[in-house]
Amino acid sequence: VLTLRDDERAVVAAMWAFRARSENQAAARFARIADRLDALEAPHTLRALARRSIEDERRHRGRCAALATRFGHASLEVELIEAPAPEVAPARLSPERRITYELVAFCCLTESINATLLTRSFAVATEPDSRVAMREILADEVQHARLGWAHLAQSNDRAWVSEHFTTMLEATVPEELRDPRIQSDPSPALRAHGVFARAELREILIECVDGVITPGFSLLGVDAEPIRTWMTNNVRQE
Ligand SMILES: [Fe+2]
Ligand SMILES: [Fe+2]
Image (cartoon, rainbow, N blue to C red; front, side):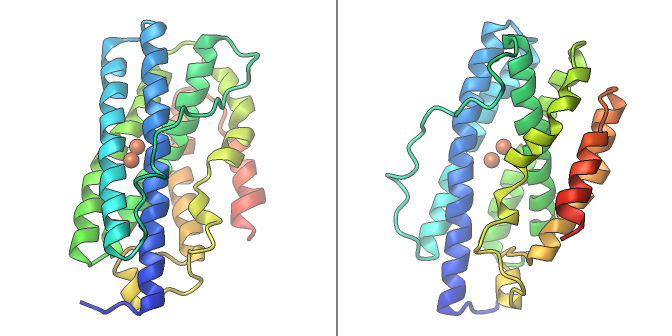
């Protein structure tokens, strides 16, 4: 096992703390999604999947926070209090369209990207504790992405989603891409913990969008062209 230098340990700690915060926000997000699916009397399977997702995200939060402190991060206990998730869908949309918007942005987009990122992290990471956490979280994130796709597939009001893709991508492309803690050229010791180079993260994003996201929407008759345009202008050119 490769030894981390002190500054590298801090990077690993910050990475897990960053993830713990994302998991915390995801828990709050699913709590509201579950309530809204109940209120709209959505199919039982979708409501059950949303409820389960809340518990998954809380478990992920705990795992990530534990790893952060193990690598030297200060306690995250106070910081990780669940606050209500901010509204993302435009207020002018109907309640039905608002939940569709939220599920597309967070499940079809964010969770699909998370799952691809974790798949790649798991493939390169060799540090045993990181691998255990990644594998467990990955299996759940795949289910969370499915909630969005399943909801969209059973809805017959979805073509309009296309006009919001640009806004959604601006807000949901993983912050990791802009995270200053991501290294331009991580050492083998950092890579063993699943730390990526910025250029690699961009590649992963392209792989997910081209391989999963745009085909998924096209299959459901939702025009994915705004996604391709946004990727060309914001990700491919850098
Ligand atoms: Fe999660
Ligand atoms: Fe998730």
